[in-house]
Length: 459
Image (cartoon, rainbow, N blue to C red):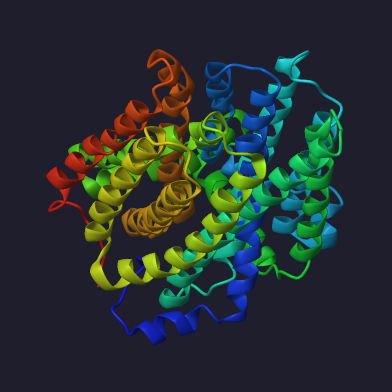
């Protein structure tokens, strides 16, 4: 059964957001979004203030690449149990807590590190955070989906929007605390203000884990029973107890099966077109996002300015327009929403060019940041809906993870050269932002060519 987006009144749509389960989904989204603060803006600004170049900071962003491949180990996360934790708090929550402990330990390592003296170590710890975060996302998504019944289409759509709100809440509010803490400690004369900030962020992780205990986990026994039944089926068909052959079939079924299904459903050329579109759609946004905090710093804005305008105001804007964006997708259709999202993203990137070529202006800064957040929120909801309509429900989790990973791969691999591009332009930020606006055009051309051949179940 595909996710269906039915037209309904504004009041009907918004009433779904008041379901108590949406609060739990909001927290799960925040748990998922928070680590991006650590390896994104916090790490970037830490490296910048320790004297490292824009190119180095841009290439350091390659650690985000692990998010592009987490679908490869998703079957393992579904099967392997964490000693002690699984029995005590459940399979899903056990994995999340385990990953959170790794992230917390990584922050402690950062708190005793100096990137100017040992950059490789700092980046390696960042990579550990990224792997732990990408791994917990597999379980967070599963636990989020399991909060909603299979036949609750409207609640599932609302849950998707609420998950996006939660993600941005964890990312934005975590960024506010990060930036304000760093500036406060710096003004108090602490030379290791970033290291102390990471310890403060560690407290947030502990609080999130306390909240996680209020989220119910169901279906564990049924899932394990079905896994054992499938294992027995494979064993009977194989007619052999050879461990190597059984492992090979298990890997083939869990990874290649969903890929074959995707190409069969859409046809080879359309499937390639979909993958190309997903890979390219958010590249321009990623180029801007990777360098934005460096740009703000270079044109003279303080950490508290960035916290207020980019994080606090940005969070409020994101929450409001994610919910409105979800409503637009439901009422207007996902294809129209994708084209509108692409045009809005390009337009808001050009606003940053205006900011770069103007004298320092807090009003213009706030205007550019808020509209960029509107575009990002709208595009994210449309993108999630688009992928949801494309997947085969037989392989929902794996195909969704695969498509989302390809989108992440485009953003992380290509955008890692963002710092080098600014350097190549001799620091001409205005031209840089115009180029990021143009980057959305190839994806929209691909979508236009295949729009009438896409198999979407929209009703």
